[in-house]
Image 1 (cartoon, helix red, strand yellow):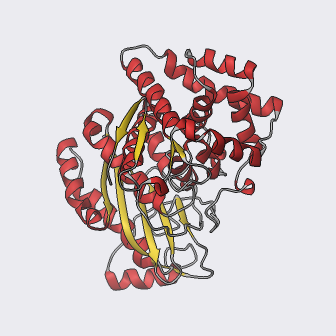
Image 2 (cartoon, one colour):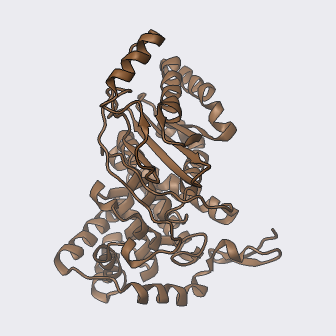
Length: 405
């Protein structure tokens, strides 16, 4: 998955409420575990280093589908969820936002001591990626988030994000050791941010003369990397529009969830009777786990799994979110005991949706879908940050809970 590019990431204020942060941690952990279980740790890093997939992951986890907050929230959720199981899964996430980014070297050294890595080499790589994005590329963005992900075998990925105070935009940069051959020749697997026109890029392939002059002064030799790139451009508008979504792909998900015959077959694949709304969510989560790289050109589509915290395209349906989590967690727990039927059914669900899309070519009726989701939202305990008022009660799963803010 060798991609890099540029996309708009509008800065959004606010916070991730606790009720969503906890669910994001659980879902992010389950998705990671599913990918590692079926494809290995390297495949997870490849996905993580793809800006399109990363954006889809944030959307399916209930974050605003296009905002800069996806980066901080997703990496924070993954770090919280994977830390207790790092040794078991062989995935370690270091760094984070602000002061946490400065802890990266010590965290890497600790992991290196445990796993027998060259800790200083990892620290040097971490610093080098940050310096290239912060200093060598004069695009007006200052790095404020740096996450370094390393596996038990020493493969790594970096996700970092910069802020441009003047434009009020963010830019996300992706790196991956599997594609890195030369750190000073177009090294990114992904760059996401607002297009700024012509910029000074000292790691551009055509900047050789400037590179050599700097190297002569510094008496250093470059390390080698390679990458390929694509562009992800996200619009400034907050709401999800039909133009942001591949309606045929979404139509196949809806057909499988709501057309009686197709739904019966999908439930047979999953070996479990599920409501149509849960099937809709699981089909989109399954695509995040099993989908090919080309399937993530429209990351907004994945917000139709669990909505968005600001209510776009609709409120987060807590009952559906919890049902999706329960299915995925149960499938993974059974697989640990040797029973892969439910987990294999989850993979087959993704294949079935692709078959429906190819053969039947259904197309989602976008406005009707939004109206339907808003209509059923109360019955699914739909919630957004706008509902977080002092003393407000809310539902979690089957039990009514009272929370004070």
